[in-house]
Length: 586
Image (cartoon, rainbow, N blue to C red; front, side, top):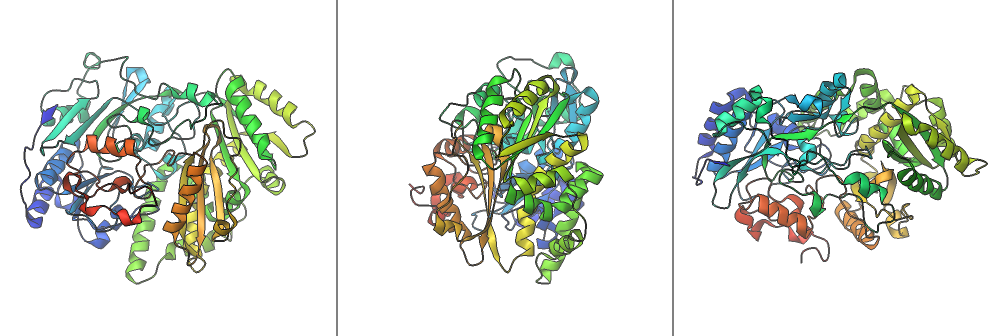
Protein backbone atom coordinates (compact mmCIF):
# COMPACT_ATOMS: atom_id res chain seq x y z
CA UNK A 1 0.00 0.00 0.00
CA UNK A 2 1.45 3.35 -1.08
CA UNK A 3 0.10 6.58 0.46
CA UNK A 4 -0.12 10.01 -1.13
CA UNK A 5 -2.38 12.92 -0.22
CA UNK A 6 -2.78 13.31 3.56
CA UNK A 7 -5.37 16.09 3.78
CA UNK A 8 -7.79 17.95 1.57
CA UNK A 9 -7.30 21.63 0.84
CA UNK A 10 -9.83 24.14 -0.48
CA UNK A 11 -8.98 24.75 -4.13
CA UNK A 12 -10.83 27.08 -6.46
CA UNK A 13 -12.56 25.76 -9.54
CA UNK A 14 -10.14 27.54 -11.87
CA UNK A 15 -7.11 26.30 -9.96
CA UNK A 16 -8.30 22.70 -10.07
CA UNK A 17 -9.08 22.89 -13.78
CA UNK A 18 -5.58 24.20 -14.36
CA UNK A 19 -4.12 21.23 -12.46
CA UNK A 20 -6.23 18.79 -14.47
CA UNK A 21 -5.20 20.37 -17.78
CA UNK A 22 -1.56 20.23 -16.75
CA UNK A 23 -1.92 16.52 -16.01
CA UNK A 24 -3.67 15.33 -19.20
CA UNK A 25 -3.55 18.23 -21.65
CA UNK A 26 -6.26 20.87 -22.29
CA UNK A 27 -7.92 18.82 -25.04
CA UNK A 28 -8.81 16.09 -22.56
CA UNK A 29 -10.46 18.26 -19.92
CA UNK A 30 -14.04 18.87 -21.04
CA UNK A 31 -16.30 21.48 -19.50
CA UNK A 32 -19.70 22.87 -20.43
CA UNK A 33 -22.97 21.07 -20.95
CA UNK A 34 -22.55 20.21 -24.61
CA UNK A 35 -18.97 18.97 -24.44
CA UNK A 36 -19.69 16.75 -21.43
CA UNK A 37 -23.16 15.52 -22.39
CA UNK A 38 -22.31 12.02 -23.64
CA UNK A 39 -20.28 11.34 -20.50
CA UNK A 40 -22.58 12.77 -17.83
CA UNK A 41 -25.79 11.33 -19.34
CA UNK A 42 -26.40 7.61 -18.82
CA UNK A 43 -27.04 5.11 -21.61
CA UNK A 44 -30.54 4.42 -20.32
CA UNK A 45 -31.05 6.61 -17.24
CA UNK A 46 -29.38 9.26 -15.09
CA UNK A 47 -27.63 12.55 -15.76
CA UNK A 48 -26.35 15.56 -13.89
CA UNK A 49 -23.86 18.44 -13.95
CA UNK A 50 -20.11 18.00 -13.54
CA UNK A 51 -17.24 20.38 -13.00
CA UNK A 52 -15.29 18.58 -15.69
CA UNK A 53 -14.90 15.34 -17.60
CA UNK A 54 -11.25 14.33 -17.64
CA UNK A 55 -9.88 11.72 -20.05
CA UNK A 56 -6.40 10.59 -18.93
CA UNK A 57 -4.24 8.79 -21.45
CA UNK A 58 -2.12 6.74 -19.07
CA UNK A 59 -2.32 5.14 -15.64
CA UNK A 60 0.06 7.77 -14.25
CA UNK A 61 -2.13 10.55 -15.64
CA UNK A 62 -5.16 8.85 -14.06
CA UNK A 63 -3.39 8.88 -10.68
CA UNK A 64 -2.45 12.56 -11.05
CA UNK A 65 -6.04 13.51 -11.90
CA UNK A 66 -7.35 11.49 -8.98
CA UNK A 67 -4.79 12.97 -6.60
CA UNK A 68 -5.70 16.53 -7.63
CA UNK A 69 -9.45 15.93 -7.32
CA UNK A 70 -9.19 14.27 -3.90
CA UNK A 71 -6.84 16.93 -2.56
CA UNK A 72 -9.30 19.60 -3.74
CA UNK A 73 -12.16 17.87 -1.90
CA UNK A 74 -14.21 17.09 -5.01
CA UNK A 75 -16.36 14.06 -5.71
CA UNK A 76 -14.90 11.57 -8.18
CA UNK A 77 -17.03 9.42 -10.46
CA UNK A 78 -15.14 6.79 -12.43
CA UNK A 79 -16.45 5.86 -15.87
CA UNK A 80 -15.35 3.74 -18.80
CA UNK A 81 -17.79 3.02 -21.65
CA UNK A 82 -20.88 4.49 -19.93
CA UNK A 83 -22.98 1.53 -21.04
CA UNK A 84 -24.67 0.94 -17.66
CA UNK A 85 -28.42 0.50 -17.47
CA UNK A 86 -28.94 1.90 -13.97
CA UNK A 87 -27.07 5.22 -14.11
CA UNK A 88 -24.25 3.97 -11.90
CA UNK A 89 -21.41 5.72 -13.74
CA UNK A 90 -22.97 9.17 -14.16
CA UNK A 91 -24.21 11.84 -11.76
CA UNK A 92 -27.82 11.59 -10.65
CA UNK A 93 -29.23 15.08 -10.61
CA UNK A 94 -27.63 18.01 -8.82
CA UNK A 95 -28.16 17.19 -5.14
CA UNK A 96 -24.50 16.78 -4.19
CA UNK A 97 -22.57 18.72 -1.55
CA UNK A 98 -19.39 18.95 -3.67
CA UNK A 99 -18.58 19.45 -7.32
CA UNK A 100 -18.00 16.34 -9.44
CA UNK A 101 -14.93 15.41 -11.46
CA UNK A 102 -15.87 12.59 -13.83
CA UNK A 103 -12.84 10.54 -14.93
CA UNK A 104 -13.41 8.65 -18.17
CA UNK A 105 -10.77 5.96 -18.70
CA UNK A 106 -11.43 4.73 -22.24
CA UNK A 107 -8.16 6.20 -23.55
CA UNK A 108 -6.17 3.89 -21.28
CA UNK A 109 -6.43 0.76 -23.37
CA UNK A 110 -4.41 -2.35 -22.80
CA UNK A 111 -4.73 -6.11 -22.41
CA UNK A 112 -1.65 -8.01 -21.23
CA UNK A 113 -1.63 -11.79 -21.68
CA UNK A 114 0.09 -13.73 -18.90
CA UNK A 115 0.45 -17.37 -17.81
CA UNK A 116 0.48 -18.56 -21.43
CA UNK A 117 -2.96 -17.07 -22.07
CA UNK A 118 -4.63 -18.60 -19.03
CA UNK A 119 -4.90 -15.13 -17.50
CA UNK A 120 -4.92 -11.49 -18.58
CA UNK A 121 -4.25 -8.13 -16.97
CA UNK A 122 -6.73 -5.53 -18.18
CA UNK A 123 -6.28 -1.76 -17.91
CA UNK A 124 -9.21 0.63 -17.33
CA UNK A 125 -10.09 1.24 -20.99
CA UNK A 126 -9.99 -2.40 -22.08
CA UNK A 127 -13.32 -3.45 -23.55
CA UNK A 128 -14.80 -6.93 -23.67
CA UNK A 129 -14.75 -6.72 -27.44
CA UNK A 130 -11.01 -5.98 -27.49
CA UNK A 131 -10.31 -8.71 -24.95
CA UNK A 132 -12.21 -11.18 -27.11
CA UNK A 133 -10.10 -10.17 -30.12
CA UNK A 134 -6.84 -10.58 -28.19
CA UNK A 135 -7.77 -14.04 -26.95
CA UNK A 136 -9.23 -15.40 -30.20
CA UNK A 137 -5.86 -16.42 -31.75
CA UNK A 138 -5.09 -18.30 -28.51
CA UNK A 139 -8.31 -20.29 -28.72
CA UNK A 140 -9.59 -18.73 -25.53
CA UNK A 141 -12.44 -16.46 -24.42
CA UNK A 142 -13.12 -13.85 -21.71
CA UNK A 143 -15.73 -14.20 -19.00
CA UNK A 144 -18.45 -12.58 -21.16
CA UNK A 145 -19.01 -12.61 -24.91
CA UNK A 146 -21.43 -10.74 -27.22
CA UNK A 147 -23.84 -9.54 -24.49
CA UNK A 148 -22.19 -6.51 -22.91
CA UNK A 149 -19.54 -6.40 -25.60
CA UNK A 150 -22.31 -5.43 -28.04
CA UNK A 151 -22.20 -1.88 -26.73
CA UNK A 152 -18.51 -1.72 -25.92
CA UNK A 153 -18.68 -2.40 -22.19
CA UNK A 154 -15.39 -2.34 -20.31
CA UNK A 155 -13.79 -5.28 -18.54
CA UNK A 156 -13.27 -3.31 -15.32
CA UNK A 157 -16.86 -2.10 -15.39
CA UNK A 158 -18.02 -5.71 -15.38
CA UNK A 159 -15.92 -6.46 -12.31
CA UNK A 160 -17.16 -3.36 -10.46
CA UNK A 161 -20.78 -4.21 -11.19
CA UNK A 162 -20.82 -7.99 -10.58
CA UNK A 163 -21.91 -8.32 -14.20
CA UNK A 164 -23.31 -11.79 -14.69
CA UNK A 165 -23.13 -12.44 -18.40
CA UNK A 166 -24.90 -15.08 -20.43
CA UNK A 167 -22.46 -17.93 -20.04
CA UNK A 168 -23.83 -20.52 -17.64
CA UNK A 169 -20.48 -22.03 -16.68
CA UNK A 170 -18.78 -18.81 -15.57
CA UNK A 171 -21.02 -16.89 -13.22
CA UNK A 172 -20.60 -13.24 -12.23
CA UNK A 173 -17.49 -11.31 -13.23
CA UNK A 174 -15.20 -11.67 -10.24
CA UNK A 175 -11.58 -11.35 -9.19
CA UNK A 176 -9.56 -11.00 -6.02
CA UNK A 177 -6.56 -9.64 -7.95
CA UNK A 178 -6.69 -5.90 -8.58
CA UNK A 179 -4.71 -2.66 -8.43
CA UNK A 180 -6.76 0.22 -7.07
CA UNK A 181 -6.71 3.57 -5.26
CA UNK A 182 -8.70 4.16 -2.11
CA UNK A 183 -9.44 7.25 -0.02
CA UNK A 184 -9.16 6.39 3.64
CA UNK A 185 -11.16 7.91 6.49
CA UNK A 186 -8.48 10.52 7.22
CA UNK A 187 -8.41 11.69 3.59
CA UNK A 188 -5.24 9.86 2.58
CA UNK A 189 -5.19 8.57 -0.97
CA UNK A 190 -3.49 5.17 -1.13
CA UNK A 191 -2.56 2.86 -3.98
CA UNK A 192 -3.21 -0.81 -3.14
CA UNK A 193 -1.43 -3.43 -5.24
CA UNK A 194 -3.28 -6.72 -4.86
CA UNK A 195 -2.63 -7.62 -8.48
CA UNK A 196 -0.15 -10.30 -7.49
CA UNK A 197 2.59 -8.70 -9.61
CA UNK A 198 5.67 -7.03 -8.10
CA UNK A 199 5.92 -3.61 -9.75
CA UNK A 200 7.83 -1.38 -7.35
CA UNK A 201 7.18 0.93 -4.42
CA UNK A 202 5.84 4.33 -5.54
CA UNK A 203 2.64 5.05 -7.49
CA UNK A 204 4.60 6.41 -10.45
CA UNK A 205 6.86 3.37 -10.61
CA UNK A 206 4.04 0.86 -10.16
CA UNK A 207 1.71 2.46 -12.70
CA UNK A 208 4.37 3.22 -15.30
CA UNK A 209 5.85 -0.28 -15.16
CA UNK A 210 2.44 -1.90 -15.36
CA UNK A 211 1.32 0.09 -18.37
CA UNK A 212 4.50 -0.67 -20.28
CA UNK A 213 4.41 -4.36 -19.30
CA UNK A 214 7.76 -3.98 -17.55
CA UNK A 215 7.62 -7.15 -15.46
CA UNK A 216 8.75 -10.77 -15.82
CA UNK A 217 7.18 -14.12 -15.04
CA UNK A 218 9.21 -14.19 -11.85
CA UNK A 219 7.38 -11.03 -10.70
CA UNK A 220 3.99 -12.76 -10.97
CA UNK A 221 2.68 -14.60 -7.92
CA UNK A 222 0.29 -17.49 -8.48
CA UNK A 223 -1.51 -17.66 -5.16
CA UNK A 224 -4.15 -20.38 -4.96
CA UNK A 225 -5.90 -18.37 -2.25
CA UNK A 226 -6.59 -15.46 -4.64
CA UNK A 227 -9.19 -16.26 -7.31
CA UNK A 228 -9.33 -14.59 -10.71
CA UNK A 229 -12.83 -15.87 -11.52
CA UNK A 230 -15.79 -17.18 -9.54
CA UNK A 231 -14.78 -20.67 -8.34
CA UNK A 232 -18.19 -21.62 -6.94
CA UNK A 233 -20.73 -20.78 -9.60
CA UNK A 234 -20.86 -24.02 -11.59
CA UNK A 235 -21.83 -25.99 -8.51
CA UNK A 236 -24.31 -23.31 -7.41
CA UNK A 237 -26.23 -23.17 -10.68
CA UNK A 238 -26.51 -26.96 -10.82
CA UNK A 239 -28.21 -27.01 -7.42
CA UNK A 240 -31.68 -26.48 -8.89
CA UNK A 241 -33.54 -27.33 -5.69
CA UNK A 242 -32.03 -24.55 -3.59
CA UNK A 243 -34.53 -22.01 -2.30
CA UNK A 244 -32.31 -19.05 -3.20
CA UNK A 245 -30.97 -17.37 -6.37
CA UNK A 246 -27.77 -18.59 -7.98
CA UNK A 247 -26.38 -15.05 -8.25
CA UNK A 248 -27.33 -11.50 -7.40
CA UNK A 249 -25.56 -8.18 -7.00
CA UNK A 250 -25.66 -7.92 -3.20
CA UNK A 251 -24.48 -11.48 -2.47
CA UNK A 252 -21.89 -10.90 0.30
CA UNK A 253 -19.88 -13.94 -0.83
CA UNK A 254 -19.09 -12.16 -4.11
CA UNK A 255 -18.17 -8.74 -2.72
CA UNK A 256 -14.39 -8.44 -2.51
CA UNK A 257 -12.40 -5.22 -2.96
CA UNK A 258 -12.79 -4.36 -6.66
CA UNK A 259 -15.46 -7.01 -7.28
CA UNK A 260 -18.84 -5.37 -6.75
CA UNK A 261 -17.25 -2.05 -5.78
CA UNK A 262 -19.58 0.01 -8.02
CA UNK A 263 -17.16 2.91 -8.37
CA UNK A 264 -16.33 3.19 -4.65
CA UNK A 265 -12.67 2.57 -5.56
CA UNK A 266 -10.56 3.87 -8.43
CA UNK A 267 -9.42 0.82 -10.40
CA UNK A 268 -6.19 0.78 -12.41
CA UNK A 269 -6.07 -2.89 -13.41
CA UNK A 270 -7.62 -6.28 -12.78
CA UNK A 271 -6.25 -9.76 -13.36
CA UNK A 272 -8.68 -12.34 -14.72
CA UNK A 273 -8.88 -15.95 -15.81
CA UNK A 274 -9.61 -16.80 -19.44
CA UNK A 275 -11.44 -19.86 -20.71
CA UNK A 276 -10.95 -22.37 -23.54
CA UNK A 277 -13.14 -21.73 -26.56
CA UNK A 278 -15.13 -24.85 -27.41
CA UNK A 279 -17.05 -25.91 -30.49
CA UNK A 280 -20.78 -25.70 -29.91
CA UNK A 281 -24.26 -26.44 -31.25
CA UNK A 282 -27.33 -24.20 -30.97
CA UNK A 283 -30.86 -25.50 -30.49
CA UNK A 284 -33.93 -23.25 -30.81
CA UNK A 285 -36.82 -24.31 -28.55
CA UNK A 286 -40.35 -22.93 -28.54
CA UNK A 287 -43.34 -23.68 -26.36
CA UNK A 288 -46.68 -22.37 -25.21
CA UNK A 289 -46.25 -24.14 -21.86
CA UNK A 290 -43.76 -22.66 -19.41
CA UNK A 291 -43.38 -26.07 -17.76
CA UNK A 292 -41.68 -27.35 -20.92
CA UNK A 293 -38.83 -24.91 -20.46
CA UNK A 294 -38.65 -25.65 -16.74
CA UNK A 295 -38.15 -29.33 -17.50
CA UNK A 296 -35.47 -28.54 -20.08
CA UNK A 297 -33.64 -26.28 -17.63
CA UNK A 298 -33.68 -28.70 -14.72
CA UNK A 299 -32.65 -31.70 -16.82
CA UNK A 300 -29.80 -30.05 -18.68
CA UNK A 301 -28.36 -28.45 -15.55
CA UNK A 302 -28.32 -31.71 -13.64
CA UNK A 303 -27.95 -34.53 -16.19
CA UNK A 304 -25.28 -33.37 -18.61
CA UNK A 305 -21.62 -34.08 -17.77
CA UNK A 306 -20.82 -30.49 -18.75
CA UNK A 307 -23.06 -27.49 -18.12
CA UNK A 308 -24.73 -25.88 -21.13
CA UNK A 309 -22.80 -22.89 -22.48
CA UNK A 310 -25.80 -20.56 -22.64
CA UNK A 311 -29.57 -20.64 -22.35
CA UNK A 312 -31.31 -17.38 -23.29
CA UNK A 313 -35.04 -16.82 -22.86
CA UNK A 314 -37.21 -14.52 -25.00
CA UNK A 315 -40.94 -13.96 -24.61
CA UNK A 316 -42.90 -13.32 -27.81
CA UNK A 317 -43.55 -9.65 -26.98
CA UNK A 318 -39.84 -9.05 -26.40
CA UNK A 319 -39.15 -10.89 -29.66
CA UNK A 320 -41.49 -8.55 -31.54
CA UNK A 321 -40.23 -5.32 -29.98
CA UNK A 322 -36.65 -6.43 -30.55
CA UNK A 323 -37.27 -7.38 -34.16
CA UNK A 324 -38.72 -3.97 -35.01
CA UNK A 325 -36.96 -1.56 -32.67
CA UNK A 326 -33.61 -3.33 -32.29
CA UNK A 327 -33.12 -3.91 -36.01
CA UNK A 328 -30.47 -1.20 -36.46
CA UNK A 329 -28.40 -2.57 -33.57
CA UNK A 330 -28.68 -6.08 -34.99
CA UNK A 331 -27.68 -4.99 -38.49
CA UNK A 332 -24.80 -2.82 -37.26
CA UNK A 333 -23.25 -5.69 -35.31
CA UNK A 334 -24.07 -8.28 -37.97
CA UNK A 335 -22.38 -6.29 -40.74
CA UNK A 336 -19.55 -4.53 -38.91
CA UNK A 337 -18.99 -6.36 -35.61
CA UNK A 338 -19.13 -5.08 -32.07
CA UNK A 339 -16.02 -2.90 -32.45
CA UNK A 340 -18.00 -0.24 -34.38
CA UNK A 341 -20.84 0.05 -31.87
CA UNK A 342 -19.23 2.42 -29.32
CA UNK A 343 -18.40 4.93 -32.08
CA UNK A 344 -21.97 4.70 -33.37
CA UNK A 345 -23.33 5.36 -29.88
CA UNK A 346 -21.01 8.34 -29.46
CA UNK A 347 -22.10 9.82 -32.81
CA UNK A 348 -25.75 9.34 -31.92
CA UNK A 349 -25.19 11.08 -28.58
CA UNK A 350 -23.65 14.11 -30.30
CA UNK A 351 -26.53 14.31 -32.80
CA UNK A 352 -29.09 14.03 -29.99
CA UNK A 353 -27.28 16.72 -28.01
CA UNK A 354 -27.45 19.10 -30.97
CA UNK A 355 -31.19 18.66 -31.45
CA UNK A 356 -31.91 18.80 -27.71
CA UNK A 357 -30.41 22.29 -27.65
CA UNK A 358 -33.15 23.19 -30.14
CA UNK A 359 -35.78 21.66 -27.88
CA UNK A 360 -36.16 18.53 -30.03
CA UNK A 361 -35.82 15.15 -28.34
CA UNK A 362 -35.44 11.73 -29.94
CA UNK A 363 -34.80 13.00 -33.48
CA UNK A 364 -32.13 10.44 -34.30
CA UNK A 365 -34.25 7.60 -32.93
CA UNK A 366 -37.24 8.56 -35.07
CA UNK A 367 -35.11 8.94 -38.20
CA UNK A 368 -33.32 5.62 -37.66
CA UNK A 369 -36.61 3.86 -36.96
CA UNK A 370 -38.27 5.28 -40.05
CA UNK A 371 -35.39 4.00 -42.18
CA UNK A 372 -35.23 0.53 -40.64
CA UNK A 373 -39.00 0.14 -41.00
CA UNK A 374 -38.42 0.14 -44.76
CA UNK A 375 -36.13 -2.88 -44.56
CA UNK A 376 -37.32 -6.51 -44.75
CA UNK A 377 -37.08 -8.80 -41.74
CA UNK A 378 -33.50 -9.63 -40.84
CA UNK A 379 -34.31 -12.83 -38.92
CA UNK A 380 -34.12 -16.37 -40.36
CA UNK A 381 -37.38 -17.93 -41.64
CA UNK A 382 -37.46 -20.73 -39.05
CA UNK A 383 -37.19 -18.22 -36.21
CA UNK A 384 -40.13 -16.30 -37.65
CA UNK A 385 -42.13 -19.53 -37.91
CA UNK A 386 -41.42 -20.34 -34.26
CA UNK A 387 -42.50 -16.83 -33.30
CA UNK A 388 -45.91 -17.47 -34.90
CA UNK A 389 -46.32 -20.81 -33.13
CA UNK A 390 -44.96 -20.22 -29.63
CA UNK A 391 -45.02 -17.59 -26.87
CA UNK A 392 -41.88 -18.78 -25.05
CA UNK A 393 -38.52 -19.08 -26.82
CA UNK A 394 -35.31 -20.63 -25.48
CA UNK A 395 -31.97 -20.32 -27.25
CA UNK A 396 -29.75 -23.18 -26.11
CA UNK A 397 -26.02 -23.46 -26.81
CA UNK A 398 -24.16 -26.60 -25.71
CA UNK A 399 -20.65 -27.86 -26.32
CA UNK A 400 -20.42 -30.44 -29.07
CA UNK A 401 -19.42 -33.16 -26.62
CA UNK A 402 -22.89 -32.87 -25.05
CA UNK A 403 -24.84 -32.18 -28.25
CA UNK A 404 -25.89 -35.82 -28.79
CA UNK A 405 -27.25 -36.13 -25.25
CA UNK A 406 -29.08 -32.82 -25.62
CA UNK A 407 -30.53 -33.81 -28.98
CA UNK A 408 -31.75 -37.12 -27.59
CA UNK A 409 -33.42 -35.46 -24.62
CA UNK A 410 -35.19 -32.84 -26.74
CA UNK A 411 -36.38 -35.52 -29.15
CA UNK A 412 -37.84 -37.58 -26.32
CA UNK A 413 -39.35 -34.68 -24.40
CA UNK A 414 -41.10 -33.03 -27.35
CA UNK A 415 -42.09 -36.25 -29.16
CA UNK A 416 -45.77 -35.87 -30.00
CA UNK A 417 -45.97 -32.65 -28.00
CA UNK A 418 -48.84 -30.30 -28.73
CA UNK A 419 -47.27 -27.50 -26.68
CA UNK A 420 -43.75 -27.12 -28.03
CA UNK A 421 -41.04 -28.01 -30.47
CA UNK A 422 -37.39 -27.44 -31.38
CA UNK A 423 -34.98 -27.31 -34.26
CA UNK A 424 -31.21 -27.49 -34.55
CA UNK A 425 -29.75 -24.26 -35.91
CA UNK A 426 -27.20 -24.01 -38.66
CA UNK A 427 -24.28 -21.64 -38.03
CA UNK A 428 -26.06 -18.59 -39.45
CA UNK A 429 -29.30 -19.24 -37.57
CA UNK A 430 -27.49 -19.80 -34.28
CA UNK A 431 -25.48 -16.60 -34.60
CA UNK A 432 -28.51 -14.52 -35.53
CA UNK A 433 -30.69 -16.01 -32.81
CA UNK A 434 -28.28 -14.95 -30.06
CA UNK A 435 -27.63 -11.59 -31.70
CA UNK A 436 -31.38 -10.95 -31.77
CA UNK A 437 -31.58 -11.75 -28.08
CA UNK A 438 -28.99 -9.10 -27.23
CA UNK A 439 -30.45 -6.49 -29.60
CA UNK A 440 -33.66 -6.73 -27.56
CA UNK A 441 -31.91 -5.12 -24.57
CA UNK A 442 -31.93 -1.66 -26.14
CA UNK A 443 -35.18 -1.96 -28.08
CA UNK A 444 -37.38 -0.63 -25.29
CA UNK A 445 -35.38 2.61 -25.27
CA UNK A 446 -36.04 3.09 -28.99
CA UNK A 447 -39.73 2.30 -28.49
CA UNK A 448 -39.95 4.96 -25.78
CA UNK A 449 -38.35 7.64 -27.94
CA UNK A 450 -40.48 6.87 -30.98
CA UNK A 451 -43.73 6.70 -28.97
CA UNK A 452 -43.28 9.59 -26.56
CA UNK A 453 -46.94 10.58 -26.88
CA UNK A 454 -48.08 7.24 -25.43
CA UNK A 455 -45.14 6.32 -23.18
CA UNK A 456 -44.12 7.96 -19.92
CA UNK A 457 -40.92 5.97 -19.41
CA UNK A 458 -39.41 2.51 -18.93
CA UNK A 459 -39.17 0.63 -15.66
CA UNK A 460 -36.29 -1.80 -16.20
CA UNK A 461 -35.77 -4.53 -13.61
CA UNK A 462 -33.01 -7.08 -13.38
CA UNK A 463 -34.28 -10.00 -11.31
CA UNK A 464 -32.81 -13.20 -9.87
CA UNK A 465 -35.42 -15.84 -9.07
CA UNK A 466 -34.87 -18.70 -6.66
CA UNK A 467 -33.26 -21.74 -8.26
CA UNK A 468 -36.21 -23.96 -7.31
CA UNK A 469 -38.90 -21.50 -8.45
CA UNK A 470 -41.11 -23.22 -11.02
CA UNK A 471 -43.53 -20.27 -11.26
CA UNK A 472 -41.14 -18.08 -13.21
CA UNK A 473 -43.77 -16.56 -15.54
CA UNK A 474 -44.84 -13.33 -13.86
CA UNK A 475 -48.54 -12.74 -13.18
CA UNK A 476 -49.26 -9.08 -12.49
CA UNK A 477 -52.29 -7.66 -10.66
CA UNK A 478 -54.87 -6.18 -13.02
CA UNK A 479 -54.33 -2.61 -11.78
CA UNK A 480 -50.59 -2.86 -12.45
CA UNK A 481 -51.13 -4.45 -15.87
CA UNK A 482 -53.49 -1.62 -16.82
CA UNK A 483 -50.73 0.98 -16.43
CA UNK A 484 -48.43 -0.66 -18.96
CA UNK A 485 -48.13 -0.47 -22.73
CA UNK A 486 -45.88 -3.52 -23.08
CA UNK A 487 -43.95 -5.95 -20.89
CA UNK A 488 -40.66 -7.33 -22.21
CA UNK A 489 -39.31 -10.51 -20.59
CA UNK A 490 -35.92 -11.92 -21.61
CA UNK A 491 -32.89 -13.20 -19.78
CA UNK A 492 -30.42 -15.88 -18.75
CA UNK A 493 -32.84 -18.73 -18.21
CA UNK A 494 -30.53 -21.40 -16.81
CA UNK A 495 -29.28 -18.96 -14.16
CA UNK A 496 -32.91 -17.91 -13.52
CA UNK A 497 -31.94 -14.28 -14.13
CA UNK A 498 -34.54 -12.24 -15.99
CA UNK A 499 -34.53 -8.77 -17.50
CA UNK A 500 -38.01 -7.30 -17.23
CA UNK A 501 -38.67 -4.03 -19.08
CA UNK A 502 -42.04 -2.41 -18.45
CA UNK A 503 -43.05 0.30 -20.91
CA UNK A 504 -45.27 2.55 -18.78
CA UNK A 505 -48.28 4.45 -20.10
CA UNK A 506 -48.26 8.22 -20.36
CA UNK A 507 -49.22 9.87 -17.10
CA UNK A 508 -48.18 6.94 -14.88
CA UNK A 509 -45.43 7.68 -12.35
CA UNK A 510 -42.59 5.30 -13.29
CA UNK A 511 -40.92 5.62 -9.88
CA UNK A 512 -44.14 4.63 -8.11
CA UNK A 513 -44.52 1.78 -10.59
CA UNK A 514 -41.00 0.60 -9.83
CA UNK A 515 -41.73 0.56 -6.11
CA UNK A 516 -44.92 -1.44 -6.72
CA UNK A 517 -42.89 -3.95 -8.72
CA UNK A 518 -40.32 -4.23 -5.91
CA UNK A 519 -43.08 -5.18 -3.49
CA UNK A 520 -44.27 -7.91 -5.85
CA UNK A 521 -40.73 -9.23 -6.24
CA UNK A 522 -40.21 -9.21 -2.48
CA UNK A 523 -43.33 -11.35 -2.13
CA UNK A 524 -41.76 -13.83 -4.56
CA UNK A 525 -38.50 -13.76 -2.55
CA UNK A 526 -36.57 -12.69 -5.62
CA UNK A 527 -33.33 -10.70 -5.46
CA UNK A 528 -32.69 -7.56 -7.49
CA UNK A 529 -30.66 -6.36 -9.21
CA UNK A 530 -29.30 -9.69 -10.35
CA UNK A 531 -26.28 -8.74 -12.44
CA UNK A 532 -26.27 -4.97 -12.81
CA UNK A 533 -25.00 -2.32 -10.46
CA UNK A 534 -27.69 -0.94 -8.13
CA UNK A 535 -26.90 2.41 -9.74
CA UNK A 536 -29.32 5.15 -8.77
CA UNK A 537 -32.40 3.01 -9.41
CA UNK A 538 -32.20 0.30 -6.77
CA UNK A 539 -31.74 0.53 -3.00
CA UNK A 540 -28.49 -1.02 -1.78
CA UNK A 541 -29.41 -3.59 0.84
CA UNK A 542 -27.59 -3.42 4.18
CA UNK A 543 -24.72 -5.81 3.35
CA UNK A 544 -24.01 -3.97 0.11
CA UNK A 545 -24.27 -0.51 1.68
CA UNK A 546 -21.87 -1.60 4.45
CA UNK A 547 -19.45 -2.85 1.79
CA UNK A 548 -19.54 0.52 0.04
CA UNK A 549 -18.88 2.34 3.30
CA UNK A 550 -15.97 0.05 4.12
CA UNK A 551 -14.39 0.69 0.73
CA UNK A 552 -14.95 4.46 0.79
CA UNK A 553 -15.22 5.76 4.38
CA UNK A 554 -15.01 9.42 3.32
CA UNK A 555 -17.68 8.98 0.60
CA UNK A 556 -15.42 10.54 -2.03
CA UNK A 557 -16.29 8.13 -4.86
CA UNK A 558 -19.71 7.92 -6.53
CA UNK A 559 -21.73 9.06 -3.49
CA UNK A 560 -25.43 8.30 -3.45
CA UNK A 561 -25.07 4.99 -5.24
CA UNK A 562 -27.87 2.64 -4.21
CA UNK A 563 -29.75 5.53 -2.54
CA UNK A 564 -27.05 5.82 0.12
CA UNK A 565 -25.92 9.12 1.64
CA UNK A 566 -24.46 11.71 -0.71
CA UNK A 567 -22.70 13.87 1.87
CA UNK A 568 -19.01 13.86 2.70
CA UNK A 569 -18.15 11.25 5.35
CA UNK A 570 -21.60 9.75 4.77
CA UNK A 571 -23.48 12.69 6.22
CA UNK A 572 -27.21 12.08 5.86
CA UNK A 573 -28.06 15.60 4.71
CA UNK A 574 -28.06 14.59 1.09
CA UNK A 575 -30.03 11.34 1.40
CA UNK A 576 -33.06 11.12 -0.84
CA UNK A 577 -35.14 9.37 1.79
CA UNK A 578 -38.43 10.73 0.52
CA UNK A 579 -37.98 8.70 -2.67
CA UNK A 580 -37.46 5.40 -0.92
CA UNK A 581 -40.28 2.85 -0.90
CA UNK A 582 -42.13 2.06 2.30
CA UNK A 583 -39.89 0.18 4.72
CA UNK A 584 -36.54 0.80 3.06
CA UNK A 585 -35.82 4.13 4.73
CA UNK A 586 -35.57 2.35 8.07
